[in-house]
Image 1 (tube, rainbow, N blue to C red):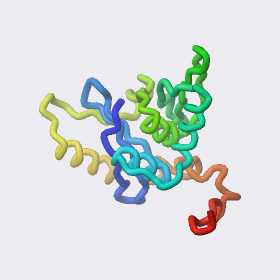
Image 2 (image 1 turned 90 degrees about the horizontal axis):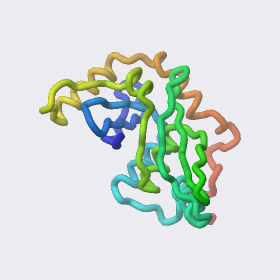
Image 3 (image 1 turned 45 degrees about the horizontal axis):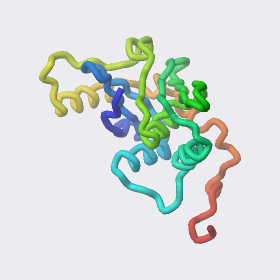
Length: 180
């Protein structure tokens, strides 16, 4: 898969990362959180933060420990929530680490690791565009039509996933930059 782009759900204003199959016209829309969207876009646009953000920190730590991120895989869609794994290699051993799909993608762009999706996920959740001469405008128009017809209930559990474990963070979980 390649990252085709990051956009916003027209109804709920929720960010969506759109993955494209490497060999075809199938696109996989994954609803993600605002921080993950910003992290993915920042790296795709070549921007850097003055200090490492969470995904940067993770990749930096793995590098210092001589652990390589070899790939990221969107493994399944369960109860309207995409699940993923980050595969790392340490001392020649592959280790699969459970991850939210948005975090896995943010790590993949930083580690320059390939992104895969299970065939069942692509079959169940992707959008296909017909023809060899599909252009970007057609894809955007079709994607907009898809977003106009999808209901919030279809992805209600995505919000639960995005906020899970964030109860204690509060608005000042990380000190403002002037206090660092």
